[in-house]
Amino acid sequence: MPGQDMSDDLTLYHWEPNANSGKPMLTLVEKGVSFASHYIDLLAFDQHKPDYLAINPMGTIPAMVHGGRLMNESTAIMEYVEEAFPGPALMPADARDRWRVRWWMKYFDQWLGPSLSMLGWNVGIGPKVRERDPEELKAAIDRIPLPERRVAWRKAIYGLFSEEELAESTRRILIGIDLVEKTLAQREWLACDSYSLADINAFNSAYFLPISQGEHCNDEKTPHIMRWLRTIYARPAVKTTWAMGRTAMANRIKIFEGEEVEKW
Amino acid sequence: MVMTLYHGEPTGPSLTVLAALFESGLEADLHPIDLAMGERHAGAIPLDDEVNYSVEGEGPVLVADGEPLCDSVFIGCFLDDAAPGSGLRPADPYLRWEMMAWCRWIIERLAPGVAALANRAWTTPRLAALDDAAFAAIIGRIVAQDLRERWEETRAGALSDEHRAASEARVQEAAKKIEDRLADRDWIMGAFSLADLESYAWIAPMRDLLPAAFEGKPRLAAWLDRVAARPSVQRALAQARTAEPAHGFAPGPEINRWG
Image (cartoon, rainbow over the protein chains, first blue to last red):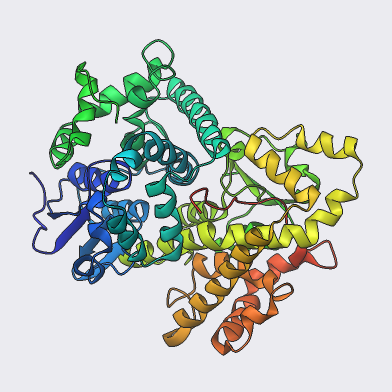
C-alpha cells in the first residue's frame, strides 16, 4: 500500500467492511495510511469479551489506537484520520462544503442508518443469530457494558421490532433514497464537487441499497445513485478495503460487477 | 460572506450558535424568531432539504451567502472553519476527535432527553392554548413527517412514564459525566471550546426541572457559572425577549430509535 507505514503505531479494530467498521477502514486506505488490522467478529460478540474491553471499555466497534491513544465513534475517527495524516484531501476547503460533509454524515449516522440497520437485523442477521444457543445469547447480552447498547442488542438479537417501527424504517429509507438521488442529480458527489468523507460514510451503507431495496434503487429509478455507487466501487481503495472482509457479507459488493449476490 | 442568523430564545441550540458566533468574531444579522410558534417554517427563511431533515429538529438557521445551515455543532464547526483561530475547536487532531465524540454524545444522548422534558414542561402549554386551525397551519408547513409527529406529541403532552424516566436518566448521566470530566480541568476540553457551549446550552435549563441532578456537584456548578460568565454567552443571553429565555424550547431531536 502506498503512503505512510504507520502499522507499528496505528491499529484499527473492525468488523466487516460495512456500515460503521467500513467508514474508518476505507478512509485509512484512501489516505494511503497503512495500519495494523485487527478483525473483531461482531456476530461472535467478540467486542464484549474481556480481551477487547481491555482495549475499548465501551465495547463498541470500530475503535482505533494511535500512539497509544484510543478513539471510538466511527465518524469522529474519520475526521481524525483526515486531519492527522497526509494523503489525498477527503475534506473540501470551503467552509460551507465542509458543513455539508458533516450534515450528510449525521444524516446517515443518526437518521437513515438506524432504519437501514433495523431492517437488516429484522430480515437478515437476526434470524441467523437466533439459531444459536439461547443461553449463549443471553450471556452475550449480559456482558455488554453500555446500558443503551444492551437495549439495542436485545432488540436486534430477538427481533423485537414492532410493525410500526419497521414501517417507519421503510418510510425513512424510501425518503433517503429520494433525497440522495435528487442530490446526486445536482452534483457529482454527495456533499460537494469532490469525493469526500461524506461519500465514504454513505457508501458503507448505501452500497447495499440496490440489493435490499432493489425495486426502489436501480438503474431505472435511481440512475444517479447507481452511477455514484459504481464510481466509488471502481476506486482501488474500495477493492483493498473489501478484501479485508472475512464473511459472505463482503461478497455483496460484487453486485457492481453484475454478479448475482445473496440478499442477506 | 453575508450571514443572517435566525435564532430562538438563548437556550438549547440557539444559545450554542449565538455564543459561537460571538466567539468567532464574525458578523451576522440577527433575526429572533419564536421557534415554538413554528416561525422557522413561516416562509422568511430559505429552507432546503438539509434544514427540513435536520436531526436536531427545531433549531436556529444560519443563512450564509444564501445557503441555510443548521445543527448547532456543525454551525459551530462552520464558524470555526470560516474564522480560524476562533478557539471554538482545539487545533490538535486528537483533541478535535475527543471534542467531536463528546458533542456527539451530547446531541445523541442528552439532547433528546432534555428536549422531551423541556417541551413537555414549557412548550406543551403554549401549543395546547392554540386552536386546532392555528396549530394545523403551523405543522402543515413542516416537511419531515417524523418532526411533524413530534410537534403533535408535544401539543398533546404525550410523554410516557418510561420516556420521562429515560430522559431524566440522561440528564443525571450528563451531569455526572461533566462533573467527572472537570476533575482536573476548568473546561470540557481543557481549554474553552464549542463542547462547553453545546453541553451548557442543553443541560443548564434542566436546573429548573431536575434540580436533584445538580446536587452535590461542585465542579459542575462552578463550570455552569464559568460558562455563563463568558462575554459571548452574556451577549447571547442578552438577546432574550421573554422572561424565561431558558424555557424557550421547540420540538427537538428524537430519542435514538434503537433505544
